[in-house]
Image (cartoon, rainbow, N blue to C red; front, side, top):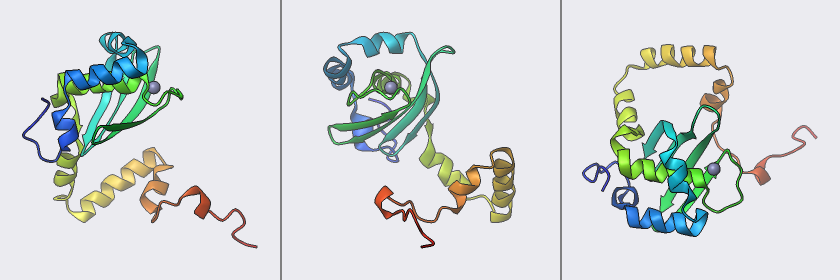
Length: 157
Ligand SMILES: [Zn+2]
């Protein structure tokens, strides 16, 4: 079982085993995800509580996938745009998790370290991030994430 002593990781992710993933695989991709996983690399792998994310594939073909586990339910978002409930890449990421959980960056640990950094130093880091990627300013300034039906299409009328 992956990182079973780390309580920052949800119990669902710590208890995940081969049998459960093989069952997801059979149901969703008829076993093709295992073959995809065996021929892929996983980059930017992150675990955060009950969530996994990463880039799965090779230099010709790769996908950014995010997974959330709630009990036995799994939800996934992937840049492949598949209309399957769980796509091949999500299952490949799950195989990556149970084989190499220690290679996933644990965001809870990173955040715990960031909390110790002085605010003035954080401001310097934020300035660097926004200078390199100006669109990130929106991520820092968005105070509330709005649902689509809360956005007023004509706010000045
Ligand atoms: Zn996908």
